Image 1 (cartoon, rainbow, N blue to C red):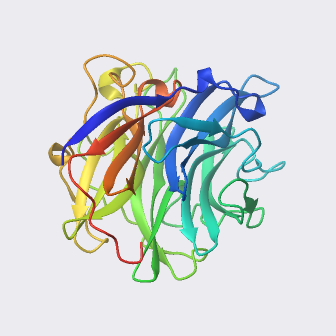
Image 2 (cartoon, one colour; image 1 turned 60 degrees about the horizontal axis):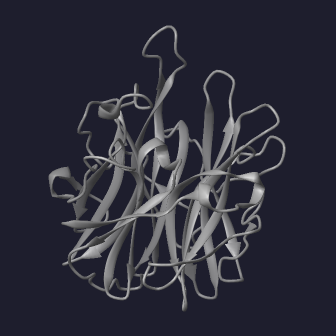
Length: 325
């Protein structure tokens, strides 16, 4: 794999966003429409006590990914009510066309007392080409379970041979690295399948090997097909010290598979890394790969978890068409 970076293409601070959001455009994910590419991301506002709330929004680009056509001026998906799994934020959102509707697999966050937050995966459905979504109930479709006890999140869903496949993360533990700082979370990538996109069978096992150590955090998988193999990009980091130390911050990892189940990790073949200077020189995170007009693109965030927007890279070769994709 070899990617050519095309630079940062969206800076949220330069636009008027709904819900009083002024910064962050995290986890950009594309929906290709007939006349535009709609890129969903999560922005943030401060609530009445000064803490962040994450809101999904979208940015529309032309079909060359060169020009911004507009940004959403309305709430795309409402946050949950009091006590709901998505009361304090929705981040990220993965979208998938399913006939005449668009499915949005959301990660809902809510604050905790002994640790910072918990997360579960929800479902929302759009019948207006992704302009607005209605939640499929108040609760999640996937949450913590016996073998996945914390932080079920970051769903990426695609359909192959009539079966829905989801790659997602689950927390394995919370860990205190010193006495003066709050505990940090550890999470890994897993896989599930479904006939209807709502009821999921999951194995509860880590499918991507660790590179750093057993406390490595793995997040936001994205999968596509090329040359008879399936390819996954994701991001990974150290569990502690990642906010202030660039060496511990997110990098983009890579793995491949011939059956969607068992994966071989080889980050050296991923073909993309941080820059020497600029907006993605300290961190790269939240990759999303999509196909457009015979080209393969990757959206991703840079420094500070996407505080100042997202960028774009293009693969040096064309995408093999995915059956039933």
